[in-house]
Amino acid sequence: MKNNFKNLIFVTNMGDDTISVIDLLSMREIYKINLNINCLLSIENKPALGPHDAVLDYNNRYLYVTNSHDSSISVVDLIQNKVIQNISAGSCPSHIEVCKKNKMIYVTNTDSNSISVLNLTTGELLTQIPTGSMPHDLKLSKDCKKLYVTNLHPNKLNIIDIATNEIESSIDVNLNPYHMTLNKDGTLIFVVNTSFSNMKRGSITIIDAKKFKIVEKIKVGKMLMGAVLGRDEKKIYITDAELNAVSVLDLKEGKIVDRIYVGRMPGSISIDKDNKYLFVCDVQDNTVSIIDIKKHKLIKSIQVGIEPSAIVSI
Image 1 (cartoon, rainbow, N blue to C red):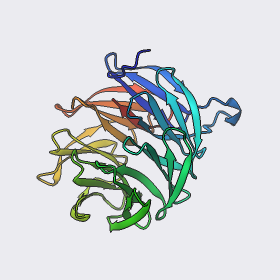
Image 2: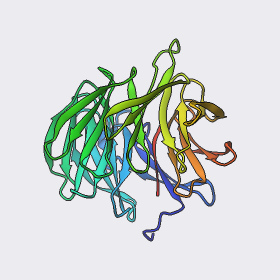
Image 3: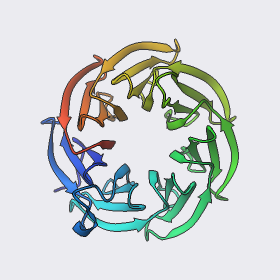
Image 4: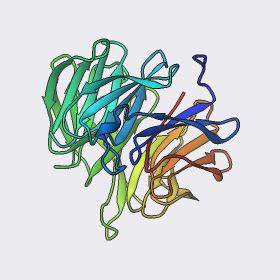
């Protein structure tokens, strides 16, 4: 297989330790990559790894996958379609970022309240950065000088200086900061605050990434999971696991202007580089929903592995 993945997306499946590869031309899963290369790890066909998140390296050849059940990272060669290395991380690794500038890997360890910093070339663990309780998502600033980390408790966004590997400031946000996304130039951070109770509403906290101050808090939906900005940055698309829908938030108006219903328990959401499709993981249905962005319309639900958790598109 040539190193050309333009029309492919890669989906991690937490429930069966696989990656589904979907061809966007035929709109179907064309094969799976098995992450569990040691079958002895499986007990009664239960997932031993639990792949949670994934990110491509800057050459678009290797996929780095966090395994929440196994406290490890799988390195997948997408040309060979197999795992070539397993790297130890902290307890319950959740989200991952690769920094081209300093050739580092950063991983949030939700159960050990830390971030693992690893050498991208060797996989060597260089240090662990203590964070607040239950760090979940993380994003690199555009200049790769800062690391933004959501902490479910005590409801903070931590800003870490990569040069010192220390928390330089913290911002109090709404309850349960779960995931986040940045705009193109990295000047704004959009934090998804979920609600684990249907008695409360979710919200989006918008933060100025230069002043590290909250610009706006917008209450929206119920159990928010993930979010992605449209390419024109006029709208943000938010998955809501309680409503089984993607809510379309107009940022200028500050309100929901549309709602696209997908499969059950939508979680991770991604957008293609051509601004044509949205991809949504429907955790309970074991499907990926594909949405036409211009029409705000569900055009296809594709069966994948068990409990799809993350989507990578090139």
